Image (cartoon, rainbow, N blue to C red; front, side, top):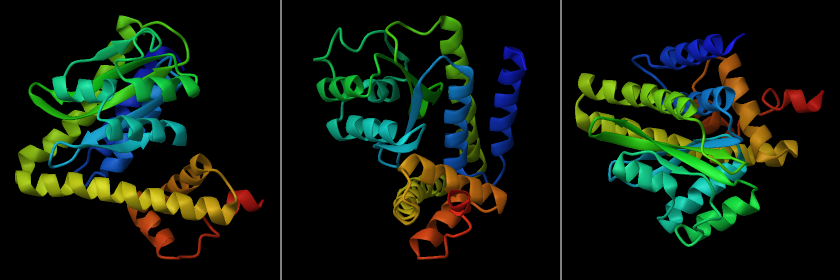
Length: 242
């Protein structure tokens, strides 16, 4: 499949998730996967704002990126926070040039071998709901075309969230967003349970959890809650037992 075909497929995939009862966690993970497939990046993470405007990690391409994003939130400093608060892209071609700008973030990113980052806001006009971080192991900015593709993907996810706001009372939307964040906490707990039971890492645990949810046509959060509540996980961990 050529680049245009992959791009079209990514947008169709994102659009398919934007139904009346869409799963915000699934939309976010689809955004991460589309970014990884289409852009010259090594990793990606997504932060979303809660009802108070505080950012939380909603999706990531790996466990180390989830921890790196958490570090930004805890330190209240990093490119993703700037992109969210300003509504403007933050393109950092070399994190080593200004380590004092975000010292904790820059140090941890360097330990993970990430040299540059592009933080893109999830925004539509004056509305901002989060930010997408795109990491590279090479020094240098992404091309303007790649940045535009990344921003377009982020915009599709943003439209899905804001579209709900036009259909439903804003208080209910706030509850839905908060619910998505609460679901993420349950998912992280379920990953830990599966990792321990299957003697696997957290990334593999999440992949198996999500694959089982898709196979059984259940919401990811519902499967995670069952795992946390001590449900039988043999079917989820089956690929590890072959």
